[in-house]
Image (cartoon, rainbow, N blue to C red; front, side, top):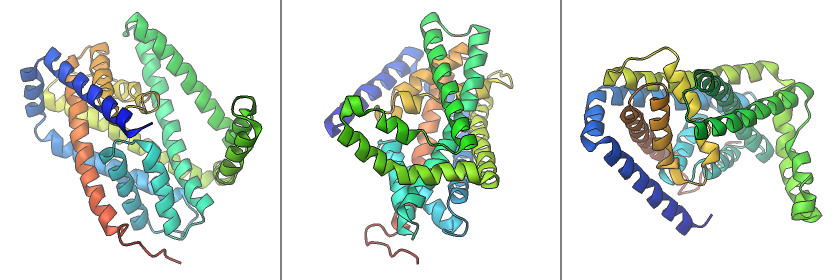
Amino acid sequence: MTRTVRVLLFIVGFGIVVLLVRHVGVRVVTGMLARVGWGFAAVTVVYALCVAIRAAALWRSVPAGAVRYADVLRIRLSGEAVEKLTLTGPFLAEPAKGWLLARRGLPAADAFAAVAAEYLLYAVVSAWLATFALSMLLARGSLPPAARIGAVVVLSVTLAFIAAFAFAAITGIGLIVPIARSTRPLVGASLAERVALTIDPVERVLVAFLHAHPTRLAQVIVLEVTAQLLLVLEIWIVIVAIGLPWRWSDPFVVEGGVKFIDVAFSFVPGQVGVSEGVFAMLFGAIGLPAAAGLTLALVRRIRALLVAAAGLGAFAWYGLASGERAIP
């Protein structure tokens, strides 16, 4: 996607945010933001802890003793800065993490497989939470007809993704390379084979990790579950700070309900406008003011920028500009 298109999408998304704020009322939104108060600091600390835990998950995804946790944490923070401040999402941030790990002396296949494993397991746990949330929303009949159809589609794709992960983990058989080769009729045999050969070394290491290292796999899953629970905690903090009534399931439903955004709207820089609209819709679906959902989305953007700013410091510490010497 060209830079011009991304800038245009960002402008459109920002315009949607402005329209949403005007629709629900500027005073209402600013009032709720003011009522969050101490919640800003609490949410920022919780999110920083979430990033640190995902760094631990990445650290456990690499061969034992290959890289120090402190280095992986700086890499994770650097990736956070790339993702949030460049508005490129995981498309640039995840490869950047693999590249940085490789600069620490890891073989390229191991480095990129570790990043892929951590991201995959985060996505799997996200899929579990999304399955719960969408099932709850559908069972309650909380969604309008159009959104209900979309929820059924997303739920079906999510369940297929979980099944594919289980198949790879249990059998030790990769799926990405066969899928790449199956595209020969569409992209040509030569291109399909080149893509398959490029992916194959990484997928082999990834599948071996999923299939042959159950202890490390379980550790990473526990860490990813913990990270997801911290994101749920963020929502609870904002709801309580605003002073809204809540049920135990509300933060889980909201967090699970927004999981599809990063994938479905990955072409929108930072999901600006999309995230705010979906949060507002989900809050309305669980019987809370849409303005509170919009407020939560804005709070999350602020805390993400604060942590990304810390990531810039990690980026500088990492010595990228001067060219860092890999550790033997």
